[in-house]
Image (cartoon, rainbow over all chains, first blue to last red; front, side, top):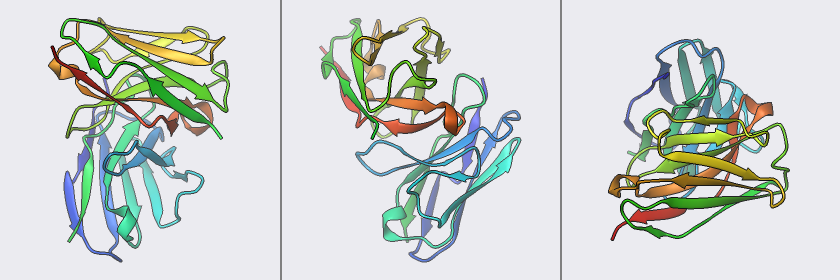
Length: 107
Length: 120
């Protein structure tokens, strides 16, 4: 099974900050890397698929990059509604493992 | 607009079988997509359970494979999860989701989730 490791596990930041979250796969997954946002009590919401493609309706301040084993999610200017937990997930093969999550909190 | 809705009993007894159904609207269960189950124990992260294709093809999380059965009902546009021999560790919010072929099989549509508690 492919393991996904996110860092950091938690992060404190302020409105307007630029934030980067990293996800590393235990083996190459090409560009089969997806990012989700989950707010408390809600279902996850797809932000980025295929490592860098922005899902329809997602603000352009979100961006993704990477290929192979190393990937990043960047939020260019944090907004109040961005404070949530973020998960990476690979869809290169099965099982389609998630990272452990990164909780983004207000500083 | 594609929507998914989970249904099933909220409480399951230990050693029993958890049964959930996901009803799909706005898309055909017989499309090219895969149909998935994901769970989230209280205060923890997301765990992929497995996925099914309308053709009957299935893929499972190896840690749950011996206890999970996924099925599809094309006539009702639904897919279902059965998890046997449940314990308290299976207490979680269970989500169904669409794994979209067009999006590298990312899960682009999710149900709202249903809370399952395993308790006597």
